[in-house]
Image (cartoon, rainbow, N blue to C red):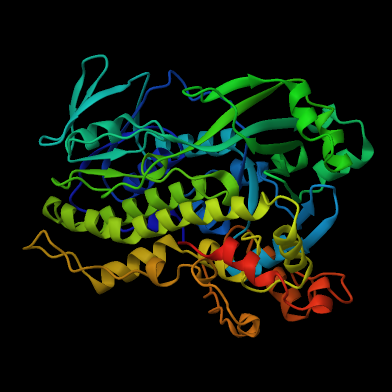
Length: 524
């Protein structure tokens, strides 16, 4: 199914999207495909070619295909063949083998590592092809929610039927919205900061490092109070490294040039191969990682204003779901607007959007914090118990949510198109009343049990039932997806295997494991 098969509304609303980041561009595309007029306001003078790596998971890559994203985006992506979690010393704790095969077989969509610039510019290109209008260097000053209309810093006043707040972590739209409630909030530090590094393959003369870059895979290093991630970009021509460490930036400073020497000192006792990569770095920036409190609602009382992306649910990068969930938001919103028969049904569509998206977005935020706790354990009994679980064959619950069967299927198995079709079929928009019946969503039903239960009896871990993932729209190369499925059917390339004859867990039993499970997986 491609972008031309969206539901198309006869209502033809005028929609303003504030922000040309990933959530704003995805929203603009999906809303335009649904038959509405879309104008995007962006504070930046141009969409600059700066940024680092992103991990695009199947819940978003299947959307991007159906939105009709240009082919050059797919050509520039890297598809990792395996995922490894290392102890910070370099010891391999687990390997998720044939990861690309497993992703396509289970979800009919790939897991891709991409450069943020490549994604943003291809989304921008697609939006312009659909007739979306862009006003760059236009910062929003205020919003009149009764009209509704936006007032820019230059004094322009623009009316619309709907305003979409997609202006990110430091959202001006959020400030305006909360002011109507007599409230305000601001981004809060998470206690972490990130060093972001991108290396070019032609910079790397070390044959072993060059092999890592040109043969895409994902590597995590879990250490005391910190962790690192490395993966290839641009079809194996670039390498992205993110180092997550305790935040020591001054209050109010969100980005600052970092000291390469200080960075290397922090990781001097880590995996030698990681340190060999770090010797190639000649400059680096440090980014403070922030979050915000949950909003009481993502829709205003007048039902003419709605939030998407980081403006309502900024996420730590530890599950790589910030961009992916932002694309989910924009797509679900656009699809619902495609089902409008008249403008009078807009309140029902926005109510359904919030029901479909808010609980899922906020649950992912919590899961990301829990993944940090799992990877940042200090050496000791809990860390040892975690490592025992990682060394064992993968089953839920599992300390790496990237491979945990329950969490992975909840994240990657999400189909925005199916969610909308099922919700609208169950609760069709009414022509007389602006109110719709409460929407029960699979997003609420399918939240990962591993994050909300504590298995008192370890024998119960084997009895956890993970529902099979239904067949999804074939993405990209159907031959690739079908080949992946055939390999699994033949017993080849099964993901998540370990070359371990007898694990420490089997030798020692579950002593110490229940305490670490409680710490990792229970949300208070």
